[in-house]
Structure formats: C-alpha cells, structure tokens
Image 1: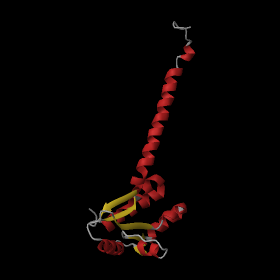
Image 2: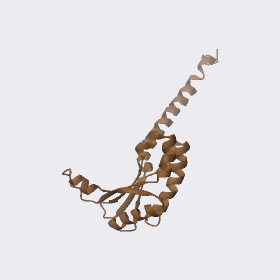
Image 3: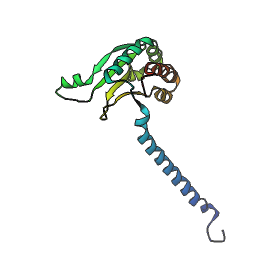
Image 4: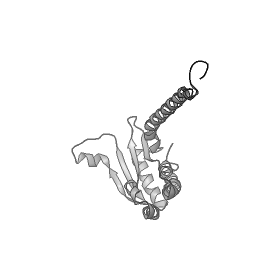
Length: 169
C-alpha cells in the first residue's frame, strides 16, 4: 500500500483518463476543422480580369490551345428558364476533357468517373464581378493518391493553370 492509502495499481487511472479525454477533444477539434474547411478547400474560386462573355470565350479558346476538348458550355440561366425558374446572375459551366488523361485514370480507377469530365464555372457575383470556379484537382488527387494523384494532381492541375493563366486576378 502507498502512504495515502491508494494501491500502486490505481495511480495510473487519473493520467489515463486525462489522456483519453485529451485525445477525444483533439479528434473533435480536427473533425470540426475538416467540416468547416473542406468546402473552401475542395473548390477554388478566383475573380476574372475580363467581363463575363469575354471570360467564357477566353477559357473556351485556351482549352483548345492546351490540347483539351470541350463538349460544350451550358448556359444555366437558359436551362433553368426552360424549367420555369428565373436566375438573374449569369452562370455558365464549361465542360472539358483531355482523352489521354481520362483513359489513364479510367484504366485503373473507374470509380472516379463521376468526377469526370472536368468542369469550370464562370459566374457573376452579387457584387457584379465575374468569377471562375473549379474543383481543386490537386487536393482531390492527393486525397485519392496513386495514379489519380499523378494525373489529377500533377498533369490536370498543370494544364488547368495554363488554361486559366493570365485570366484570373
């Protein structure tokens, strides 16, 4: 027996409880940070240096210059209007693909096909400015790892910078 009447076997209980409590609190803080930061990390938005139509045209032209193709630009305002919904701020979605990158990913990781093809949105903010948003392919690639990290994180990310380069503030 110890001098204060406690046995040696019970001395470790209090530090263990504090350790477990600290670990649970740390996990809770990490969880809160992930939930609050992930939306801002998953999408990248920048202000355009050009007007709305000029931004859309510049991106469409850069897609071809960088060896990508586009399956079109969707005018969300018109699409929604056909459904009886009016949207005042302008929004366009430009769909782009580079077949060799798509094949590289789909050969090993078909489950990510729901993220393909790439999309870039051009939209008008409430402040009247024009913005360009896209998925953070570098982060997405790192989250998946392996071949996806190589293609999305390196090759696609590099090409996206070239396509949008000089256009963004």
